[in-house]
Amino acid sequence: MQLVLFEANLLDETMNSYEFNDFFDITDFQNIEFNNCVFKKIVGNNTVFTNCYFFDCNFENVDLSNSKFYNCSFVRTKVSNSKLVGCDFEGSAFKKFEVTDSDNTYNSFSNANLKEVLFKNNKMLKIGLSETVFSKTQFDNCNLDGAEISNTNMQMIDFSSCSINNLLIDRYSLNGLTVNSEQALALSKLLGIIIK
Image (cartoon, rainbow, N blue to C red; front, top):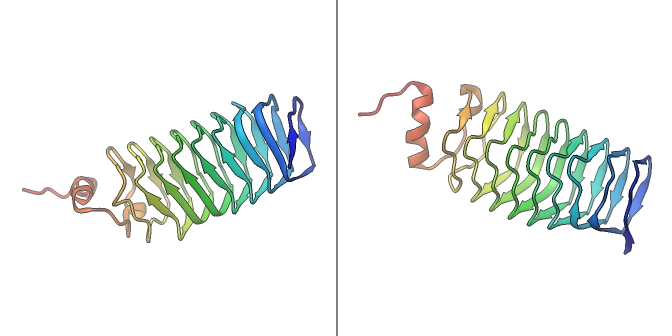
């Protein structure tokens, strides 16, 4: 695996088996394919990734807060112990993707497609799911307090092990969502149900 430090824009490249460490001051990645790469202890706030592909990659202890991932693809990729606060994944696709023990507060997954995705032990406060497509996606012990969900089919999604206080969800998205009995009681207010 090759160690790489960049301090420029990177366009139209294929990166195979590279290891990215420490700080990089890349402002813009466009049309890059990352294959079997490791991103470790990277600090790269406000970085923009456009039409990038991540295959068999690992993100470990990174801080990519406020970064943008527009129309990117993540396949067989893992993120662990990382800070991705305020990231935008608009139009991105995820397949066999795993995020564990990370802070994903204020993330946006508008128009994203998540297939066989696992979110486990994550802080996901006030995330946005708008017109998001899910298939075999799991949320396990995540804090989703204040999440905003709209125009998203949540059937087969299970939030029963998660915290969902102050969840903002429209009726369409609420249909078919699996929750525990305490959560169901709180969500009944969104339907106008009065329980005595």
